[in-house]
Amino acid sequence: MTRLGYQIPNFTYPDVAPEDLFDRIRAQAVEADESGFDTVFVMDHFYQLPMIGSHDQEMIECYTLLSALAQHTSRVRLSALVTGNTYREPALLAKTVTALDVVSGGRAQLGIGAGWFELEHDSLGFEFGTFTDRFERLEESLQIILGMLRGERPSLDGRRYTVRDAVNCPAPLSRIPVLIGGGGERKTLRMVAQYADESNIICAPDQIGRKLAALDEHCERLGRDRSEITVSLQTYACIAPTHDEAVAELDAYIERAPQAAGRRDGFILGGPDEVRARFEALLETGVDGFSVNLMANGHIPGRVRLLGETLAPLVG
Image (cartoon, rainbow, N blue to C red; front, side):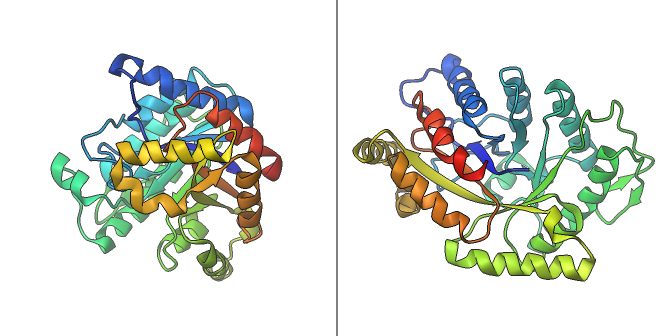
């Protein structure tokens, strides 16, 4: 499971023409594959998120992209961070993730969450529903998807989804790990304890202890061995050979994407020694690993490699 994952959330790069876009994305995945990351993630969105850029910026459908990246990597697992459950029927998603596993030689991972981006749903015609409805749908989906991924033929006559003797052939080449994204202590972490191999949380460092305690409680109540579950923390960084270069690259990104200015203080920023020290401190909170993105400068050749070489020794 994820000890050091590289997420690619941003596909808008200065002076990169559309016909060159995939090459720049591919280069990041290759650097991650070669520098110590264990997973490459992309977002499952169709619009760019408001905290990163404008909704009409570039966004590539994630499973098509992951399947393409599978042909240029050899070691990393490949996953959405995370699949929006509302975008696909569960049987289709099970088939899609299985196809990714087959074309990648057994390197697929299922990252999944309830879905949250209302503008995207309303604009593109996906049913959004209420918060409670989305989580009920997620739970029914997990029951179908896990059965199909584990060689069963699940049937379910649920409130939202119905399948009968659902066949998944060819079967996955590997046991596909399941990651549930989100840190909701009552619903999300209970589903992690019941269904998942990994929890990916987004929260401030001073909240991590409470999240881990909530997960422990759910595992104890459900009879789940807590040691079976990996907890990764989602983070964003801006690393460069020197502190000044990192600051300049973050400044340039915020000038291009002023929507990101409010997140500036959240970046783990600096040269390798500074970045390493910050992640060492985060490991002391009790998480097992990290998903890290370089939304500001991951497109610059060598930056992903520098991050991997800096952080891999911490989690290896």
